[in-house]
Image (cartoon, rainbow, N blue to C red; front, top):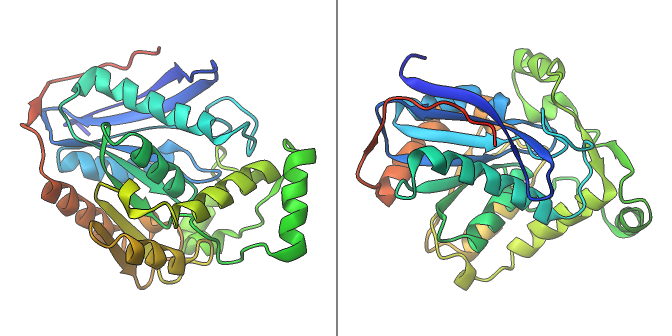
Length: 296
């Protein structure tokens, strides 16, 4: 699109892991920037249409493929600790600020596994992020491992932390449209791999955020969840909103499955996000003509 600066870039995380990222910035003026944290097996390029929409509303969009995802380096589904993911996300923020500066409001958008990661980033960096947008966040799963199975997974996370297995989630659980299901299946950069350690860490993070305490959530949060989601539990999103309702909005989508941004109700969600961001207030509009990606 002629009115959008869009490019890929490469940068390094704190431990020198090579990361691939993408940004979309409106050419003439910018009111805010959204930093994406994608879900398990996903990558930034899958949100291209979402990014273009936000840019049409003068809102920029940036993200990196988390290590082990997309074009970034790392074994799929394997993580030493969650701090590695937080460091990856931080690089996306630092990168885009080279172009937009410090005055433009920054929001973090977490999808699925990216939901709890994004929320934790916002809690720990309230001077950076003005608010959090969560889409089908992994607070709890619909099919939550319990009892002996959960104990075995935890043991594997200690004894064989880098051993991966398939999540086993079928494409039809993510997307309603058969066309979109086939598109997801044919994506060469996507995967369904997860290690026991990564599962345990994300599972624990999601549950802990439900009990983080209202004093720690001092920023606006908006949560979207499909009522037909077969992956992450919509009840856990409702639980979060009920505990931190003072500045948290919950928006159920009656016909959406897990990947809301490709569902029929995606347009409603994206427009609601724009309205929500504008309600928070924006800085004086920043104007610039063009930017060029710089690999760092």
